[in-house]
Amino acid sequence: MKKNYYPEKMMAIELLKEGKSRAEVSRVTGIDFNLLTLYWHRYQQGGHLSLMDRPGHCGYDEEIKLQVVRDYLEKGLSLMAVSLKYDIPSSTIKRWRAEYKVNGDSALKDKRKSLNKKTEHTQEYLDELEMLRKRNEYLEAENALLKKVKALVEEREARLRAIGRGPSKN
Image (cartoon, rainbow, N blue to C red; front, side, top):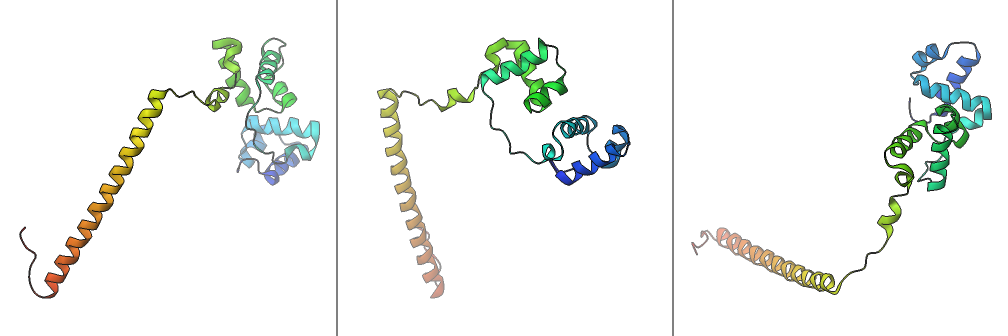
């Protein structure tokens, strides 16, 4: 099944409403049993609109992550219940739980924030950067010159072949 394919989800829900077992519907539709269970719970809570494709999420803040993990670990809510409550995939919650168990609260901090900071550059770094730019310009000019020389040599050899003389040995 294609990810988030609405018609297939609705077909599976209709089969469940007819009284077929989740295992049977899972076999027929090819939808994973656990995913089918999630779709069924979402359908029961929010109707067919809850099964529509949702745009991807590009990150959760630290407070939400902590609240989700604490609901799961400390309040004893099931993974399915937490996933439905916060509308977060269970695989994401499992990953957060594992990180939390290893490193505590600090594991759930957004690591991307530190990547966005601009670093302070020392004068030594800036001098080296300028030197490398000049070296790059020099090498590009040298490369262009060598290409021109090669083109002139090939042109000369072609002219000599055209008049019946071979290229010189020099």
